[in-house]
Length: 134
Image 1: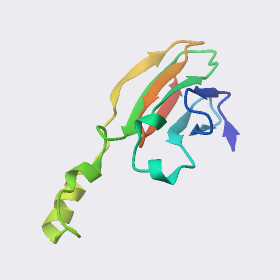
Image 2 (image 1 turned 90 degrees about the horizontal axis):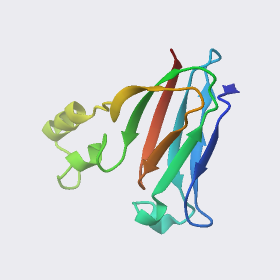
Image 3 (image 1 turned 180 degrees about the vertical axis):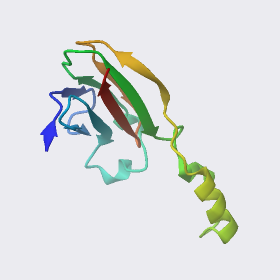
């Protein structure tokens, strides 16, 4: 597996981090996923203490198109659609399936050479960034 020559930095409390993965496809494009991470189990269901600002410094030589998908409390959150009891009925499962879509979080944009990407990541949440050469 090859990787995009990228550096990722994130602000946060000592001992916590932001995990990232950025494999490349071999032709100058690739994807990156990033999410707040902590060893503190009591924070797994969400904590503002784990919100992070992540900067992806890609060091790209040419222009690229950037697309972004997110899953958090306000993007792609299928759990927010579930308001039932212990287990969904068949009708509720069908409604959840229909609602299970992940639109892009923002319109695709042009990334100029040397430009980085900055994302604010809430906890819990994950961002998926697709980078393609123009």
